[in-house]
Length: 301
Image 1 (tube, rainbow, N blue to C red):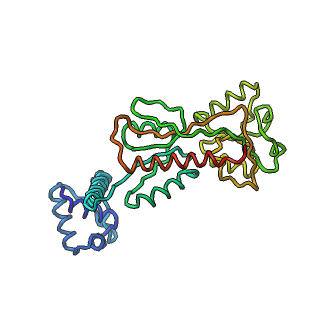
Image 2: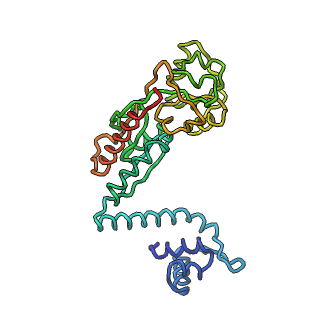
Image 3: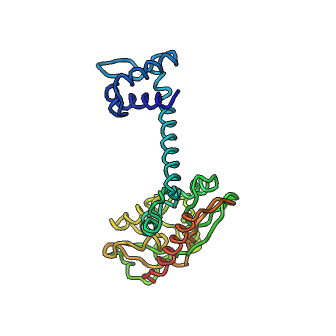
């Protein structure tokens, strides 16, 4: 199939009529009709049935519909990349981050980067840690921000700052005025915990076991943001790293250091033995600076 034939076919899929497809592509209706006729002759089977004045795809057409759209999307992406190169633009930076970080330092880092590199198209992919590691190792992402520990032979790790665990409680909770909170203080309290597969939960559970306290878990969620929102609504208490608690509403929640101290190490990962671009290194530096700034602004210790 030729590109024009694919474009005509996709336009008919989208609009359902030859006339609307012609308008979409900015050509005359006879041109679309001729293209469709030639394509059906070439393939040897009809692609559409006329039903109530509209063209309804046949089973054969539906079988190739997704592939047609994929090819056209690839061609559009190729056109964009070549246009960027012609304009001497820096292109695209593909960046991933842990889902819990999307509402914390990432917006500040993106703002600073966009000001310094306005011609770079930044793609941000919030993903679970395991998927981030796989995508960086396979070079689908140039850079990712997450919490350690992670291990993979296909990545390089750059540790950044660490953030301690804190206990987040409703502001009217009896423990809200404590200078610090430990597992013994939380015995019998309604706990909102991260999912059992989240690495951040492992040291928290270990601390409770060491104190011989069984946490009363009423909610489990993979989302730190949701855990904190549930605390704000009075559904219980949670333990998160202090970076996640940085911008909380101080009128609705209280934050206290959790003891024993549990450290959450932030890190950047890159594909191993991969050529680093100027824009990816600039973004990495901005993220590192934002991380250091956030660590310095911890005010509840």
